[in-house]
Amino acid sequence: DGRISYAEFISMMKTGTDWRMASRHYSRERFKSLSINLMKDGSLKVDDDFKG
Image (cartoon, rainbow, N blue to C red; front, side, top):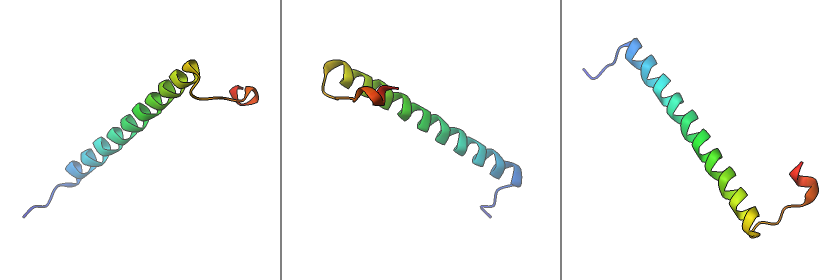
């Protein structure tokens, strides 16, 4: 009948959130390394007070 059990539903939700967290973490890391590379080659100018 196409229905899933509660346990299956829970595990699907869990893997869904795990995947979302992982992809968010991955894109944050990518953005960080990209902006560092841009700062190094001078494409991205950053104010001194922004660097912290």
